[in-house]
Length: 393
Ligand code: 2IP
Ligand code: CA
Image 1 (cartoon, rainbow, N blue to C red):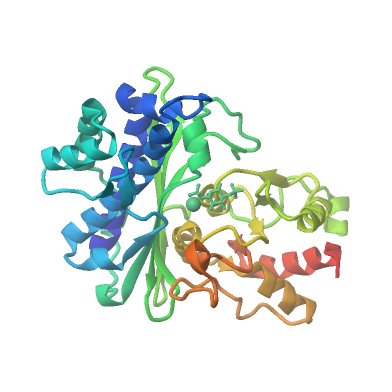
Image 2 (cartoon, rainbow, N blue to C red):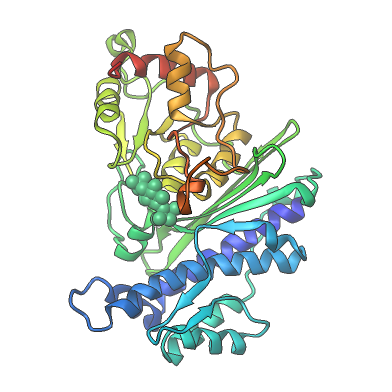
């Protein structure tokens, strides 16, 4: 079992190395940042590079998992399609080829003959990534591969990745934006039940070495299967009572919980959240990063009522949260249940094995009813009870 978890971690590490290489290797970095300039004659080409980085990372994850477990790559799905069209209108299937040279030749076609960039990218794709994580080696659980499928988000928070802000100041440990909000998300779920089992979040730009100016990454993982729950982040701060609520506030139930949300949250929900946690409401970019803030215990909940997150955004963090005794539930379902004065005993967990009925394109995989990510079931119930008091009926 530690084999699969190890393979997911290794794939995420390779992905993080490629993400860092695209920002730190001069030839690649130029292609990334070019997009910022207006009116460039090669605008389409550089926009394509950003997508190429995303697609390539996804293909590497698929390839590396398939190499370790032949056939398993068919069960790995992600946000991106690997069919690519270059400047000349040629359709190219981006994939990892058997050798570095062959991959470079293929990439050169997509990169319109930019040989130096193609070579650098191919090098990152074929490099051996090594790391040690002794805690993973202690995991001994048997999950049949035949019932396992994977959602991948190769680079979550692409916008922050391209913008590349490196000097954002966090608020109580939470980065509202910047490279820290970029994550690689790999989540494995049970194909029959749709429940997440194993998740890896890799944060490629977790901290910057002040001496070398090189970025250092951070990995988080969790496993929840048949009563076994193990997590790399189990030592993080316990959620619950906010550090910031005074005794009077505790009486009024204000600021009892810390919440992170998106700046794109619906106005009425934002109003309710602001009323409920005026001092403890945070905004941050990235669905993966916001979930990580819950996992780390920096906040108690990540709330988002809109339908613009997808299964690849939530599967990995959801698995980690389950391993901590929490989870991710459907926002609308929670509100409806609690409004009917019912308990969230059997919380409406997000599931990963079926399409949204009637939807097309990426919307088939949307978290349609929004989401609430939490670490404590007990607090989830009381939080939703408080929230509905502030929501318009
Ligand atoms: C995005 C990304 C965004 C998020 C959106 C995701 O994924 O995580 O940041 O929006 O929901 O789908 P927000 O930051 O407002 O929560 P990607 O970057 O992979 O498109
Ligand atoms: Ca995403």
